[in-house]
Image (cartoon, rainbow, N blue to C red; front, side, top):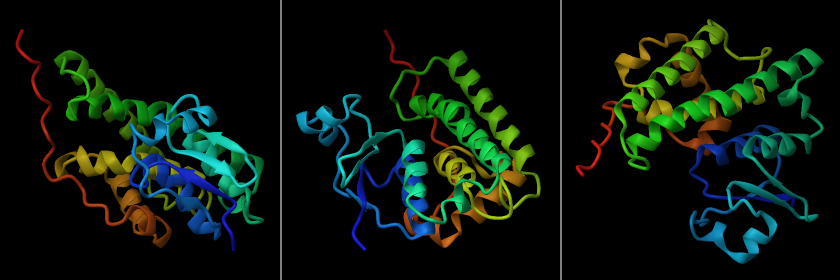
Amino acid sequence: MSSFGTLLGPTFNIRNYKARIVANILGIDLATTPSFEMGVDNKTPEFLAKFPAGKAPVFEGVDGFLLSDSTAISFYVAMQSPDSDKLLGYTNQERAKILQYAFFAESELMPAGSKVFHVLFGLIPLVQPTYENAEKELARFLGVLDTLVGEKAFLVGDRITMADIDVACNLVLIYKQYLTAEDRSQYKNLTRYLTDMVSQPAFKEVIGEVVYCVERRKPSPPAAN
């Protein structure tokens, strides 16, 4: 089977994972770019002519179709399969719920996590009150998810859907780099759920072994004037 298109971007990236997990589950041949280098390949004139925002991952179909945004790409990849409803929902209610979780992951969980990680990784300077507020916001959204998950195996229905793929991928970095064992004890439902998700073969083949955080890195103090 020949690939219907290429996912352009670093392969070890939570935004890149989603479409590849979809492809694994539905048996779709999706080409990737393991050697893609952010800051280099996404800045070339050729890339920017097709994707002016310069962000990745992006998708280029063999038919010339261009698409950006990791969630849009993962939905489009799923649509290539006659079994797409398995991931995108069998009923209008399932589809709406799946979109609800996808929007929550992208518009609430991901931005909250980014505010914390930008400080932890030294991308922006530490401003203590702002950082503490970011941590509280992230904790609130994790608590919401913990409640929504409850004792369920899947977020929507009785199988893995795009809701699970989107939410789980956005949780991976949080669990690998931020939530210690003490933190995780506050989110027992969510921790059990994510552990089950990343143990699924379709996830594991893409993400690899997910080792949870042992000791959280500390943000660097602001430079002295």
